[in-house]
Length: 210
Image (tube, rainbow, N blue to C red; front, side, top):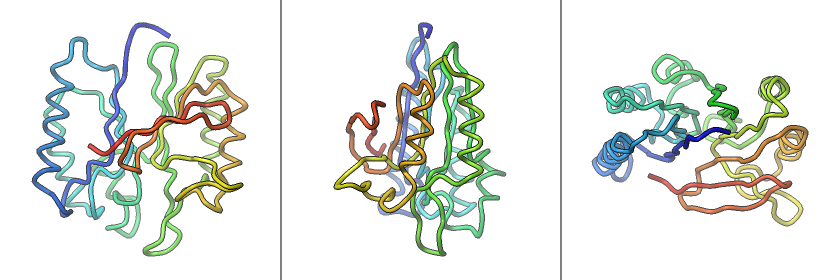
């Protein structure tokens, strides 16, 4: 797969949260730290909850804080990034696409938005038909070469169902899709702590909040 590495940051919660100054400081520190590495990572996955309230102003603050760093940042949104606006247009205009595919050497990275709005103040993780079709297409054109899937909320089986935001959702459909391809890892955030599990034979790697 080549001699390279990638980095991940997640759950930055920039903006009008409990610790806005600390969040901005932590982000600047992390970016400066990544800039100091030799060589630098080939890409940096930013796996959701960049900001707290999801307003366009907060997203613009994040954009302005990060634009001066020569780092390959790739983003996906979660509920905190989207709930302050009526739709995802502010995210698309300021940050970028809701999902994207990035090839580095013989490895393909897919980033997608698993957290979906089901009402004004309720969100859950699920895979919708257009997302399933996109992921299937991206993996089908790449397999047998390996892929890594990045999304926000860990998908962890528990008691015949799934924990947290994937509970009573269509997690099985998503995992069945991945099982048909050479997916070597799932990368997530959301829980603000580190952990690693095997789910359907695929490592699930969860990273704590920045």
